[in-house]
Picture 1 (cartoon, helix red, strand yellow):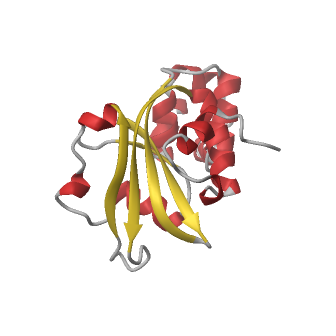
Picture 2 (tube, rainbow, N blue to C red):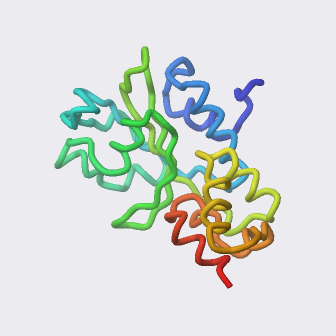
Picture 3 (tube, rainbow, N blue to C red):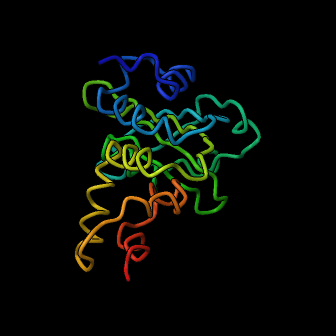
Amino acid sequence: ESYSDNALVDAVIGTGTKRERLSYRSMRLLAALAPAVTDVIGYTRYEIDGDVAARTATVRVVDKGGVAKDIASRADSDPRLTGTKHRAAYERIVTVGRGERDGRSVIIVPETVDQRVTGIVLLHVTFAPRLGAQEARKVLTGYRGRYSALVDAVTETEPDFDDMRLEQIPILSLLVDPVRVLAKEWRS
């Protein structure tokens, strides 16, 4: 299966990231997320230096585009790799995030060489407000097993999981909010 015609994969490559630095898993996750994204509005590309696992890694901005050009990067004053960017680099997995300080929605994509993370691309994106139940289920199934985790959390206390409820919750919340918090939406 080819992911070369996927809008999010194309957006990452459009930042200057080489195709060979994107793992198959990253491309698969980007393809799963694509139906939930209405627009890529900017990016910041970072180079990582140091040991991510030992928490001694630092980041340096390599390039910015779109809305990110006018956004100051914390890395300019504090180059430590921390927070959600650290988590995405440590796990070497595409990660959806919502900025704690500014509320911006982002997709963090690790760049790897020989299983070592050498950089990350932070795509600034706009998510659809909500998706239909089938589309939301498909996105959540493809993104880090969120659908299965949500069903398990709900059926811990409820007899059934109603997919139609997915239509009523913002897709960004379904992707980033803790599953145990989301499960409350299904409780009688």
